[in-house]
Amino acid sequence: MLTKEELPECPVATCVKLIGNKWKLLLIRNLLYDGKQRFTDFLKTVPSISKKVLTDNLRALEEDGLVEREVFAEVPPRVEYSLSPLGLSLKPILDAMMQWGNDYKSNLQ
Image (cartoon, rainbow, N blue to C red; front, side, top):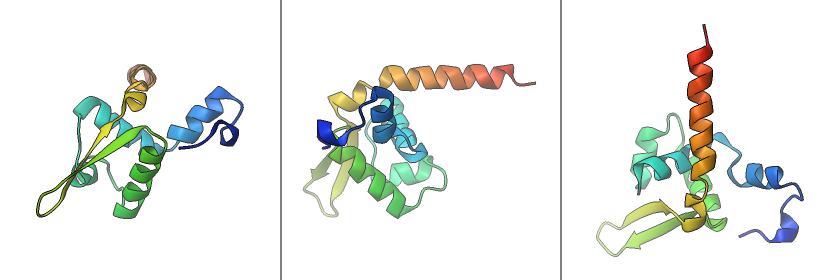
């Protein structure tokens, strides 16, 4: 997890640093609206994401405390990802983005 010193002074810049790429936003969207996900679930529902990019973004979200990873002691091993309480606090932001996107699309001619 980043320290306060490593984060930008501007709160908007902090938010962008943590969730400001399209992949992270789509992964958070999946977890927020669809619940727990496995690695293969993301590959099916996030168009054109590569396994490496998915792995890197899931690790970054986990390091930043937004996503939790649960490993089940099974053969083969099963791993599920979910939003942490901090990650769940992003719901108003994603809800607003969803509403804005819908409004924008409905105003196009």
